Image 1 (cartoon, rainbow, N blue to C red):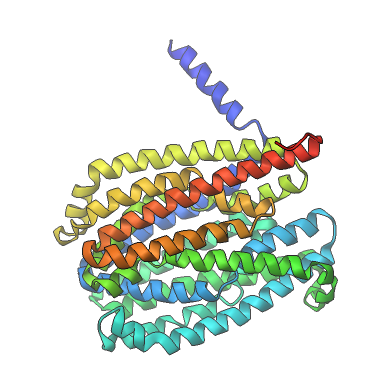
Image 2: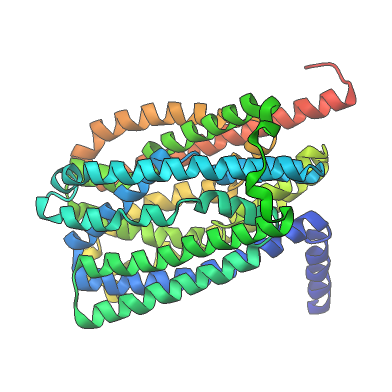
Length: 457
């Protein structure tokens, strides 16, 4: 019986990885996951140290400062990494290196302007953020100091896209590990010396600067290797016939990203604004624990998107369906396992590893896990729509979700606090992902019928 079980397991394993596409996706995901796994462990350890050192309220203020800067930066961002992956990949596939270089050049220039704008905006709004989010005007200097992280990321998005399309996932993984090790080392010193929020912010900044600058430098080296030294002088007029398409893609991804700030990425800010930093501290811990379910899943869209773009360009729909199905099995199985562990072991983890004062985070954790299970299982929903030429659909979905969620936030969060915020986030994941998945498969079926010359249904 054991022999038959072993034989069947080997057969299933070989069937799962028989496709070259899924092997590449898993390989590249493995590079990123190895880094993500190590980084997640270090992040969890430093999170424990910071939480125990600061206490719930200061822990919530810290999360508010980091999220405020991140949200403003994302507000100005056009997600140039996605544009670079799609169009640099497309021109590289079609053997048009000059146009590929022009796309990267345009993306980098746009990102530089957006980053400078975001930096100025954070500094202009810092006093308001300190007053209405941190509930303490004296924290303005913390907001101002952390704003400098934006300038370190001048072309980080475009650089990430370039490294993705040229399969430099191993470098990205190593850099992520180095960044995490440096951040953890500084946090350990801060914990031993019993510093304050400023010390923790400096630790985070140093690690993020190293990561952003490293990505940008490696991408510039890669661009030079691919397109020679003069690539940056490539005239953008080569993209003249693509201006409208590129602009539409960038605006669509921008709208989608901006709306995601409301539906997914600004949780702590709403809780801080409508309730208080203490509840933000509970919610920050719940989000951190729930993120353990995303640990190996988070890099999968990065690894999947370039492969999907290539296969869609080749109209190889069987490979597209195959890699998405297998990816969902991997991601869903892992998320279910981790969710069950957190459901049963969540209270003792919070009680003995963090501190008893953080126990109110557990109910929010349970709510979040429901939404994360759906979002992780269909982690590819957004990049798949981008790959088949529907960049505006996620924006439309996010617009509807944003309206519904803002309404829910102002109606429910003032009454039920961070638990309402967790429920609204989980609900937005479930609804948004489900609608996007249905739309994707509907569009793929339509394109398959068009290729076959079949009548519309």
